[in-house]
Structure formats: structure tokens, C-alpha cells
Image (cartoon, rainbow, N blue to C red; front, side, top):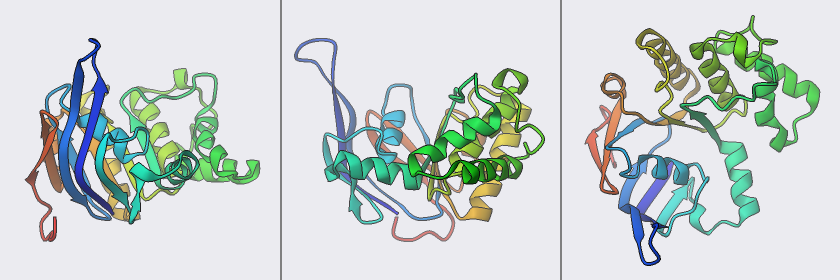
Length: 233
């Protein structure tokens, strides 16, 4: 569970004295097994918040707790371990390594965890099978469609058996039919595995399908729709 209070992020602007207030006092609780979509205008803090939630950046101020641990105060080694064990990332651009096969791309997520080569191959093959690519283990990125590449990216996020999936525009590069397939897959994995899924999206069609919806504008977050039956959020 995330417990976030007064979270701020300030970047140095182009001018010497210019400051960019990307996040301005975000307060939100994100419980286990939540599926939350975050919408908002470009440049208003969506991706910044996602990066902070995944430990890819550090806040300027406020409190950011994950399972009771204050991420803002963790040392770099502890934060790296937390990232590796708990968070799976999905990006709009897939971020696959073009010289590696689908299976090898998925295996890369397990290297920081010290998993043996044999176990890496077994777990990567299973993850790809779980996302419908069991017959594409040896294919390179150029031999896969956009939807298949995103499935590889999802398998890479899942193979670590994370608690949280963080997705930044996960369907942004896909056509409408493929978008629906990929989001349907995310919905199934969320329901079957009990994951917490947090995604940034501009897609209104997807935002209508998630149980919980938030909006960021001018660095401030507002919950626009609560999950049915949710309390304490």
C-alpha cells in the first residue's frame, strides 16, 4: 500500500532562478490490489508521480510510504532493492533491447535479483506463455508486431512477481483493437494475480474502464472516481 502526504517535486528550470513545481502537495492512499488510472494535461506531473511511485526519482518534500517504508529517506542500495523486488514497469515505447530475443528481454528483469540462468530461462518462458507469446520465445523485436512487443514488455514486468505494475501510456503506440487486447490482458492479470496497477493514460476509453480514476492538473491530484466499495481513500 502507498500512503502519500504533501508530496512535492521541484525541478530546476532553464533559467538560473527558475523552478518548475511538477507536484504540489499530493495526498493519496493507493491500497493493495487497486487499479488506478491517472489523467491530466501534458506537463502537469503525471509521469513525475509515476517515477516517484516506482523509486526512479526522489521527491523534494512530503511523505511517500510503500508498505510502511518511507521511500524518500531510503539509501540508494535499499531503494534499488525495493525497486527490483516490488515494481514492474511498462512504457509506451516498449524499451526492448533489439538484439535480444523475446525470452532474453524478459530475462533481463531477473538479473538484478541474482536469479540463476536456468531459473531465468524457465521463468521468462512461463511469463511469455502467460501473456500469450509461448510460441514467440526466440523472436527478435523486429519479428514482432506492436501488440506482441508490448506483451513482451508486460511479461518482463511480471516475471519478477512484483506487487505493483507501473505503466506509462502502455497503449499509446497501439491501434484501437490492439489497445483493447492489451488493456484486457492487464485487467485479467490484475484480477488473477492480485496486483496493484497504476497507469498514466491520455486514453479516455481506458479511463472509463478502470475501477479508480485520478486527475493531475498543475501538480495537484484529485480523485475523480472511487472504486466501488472502497473505504478510507
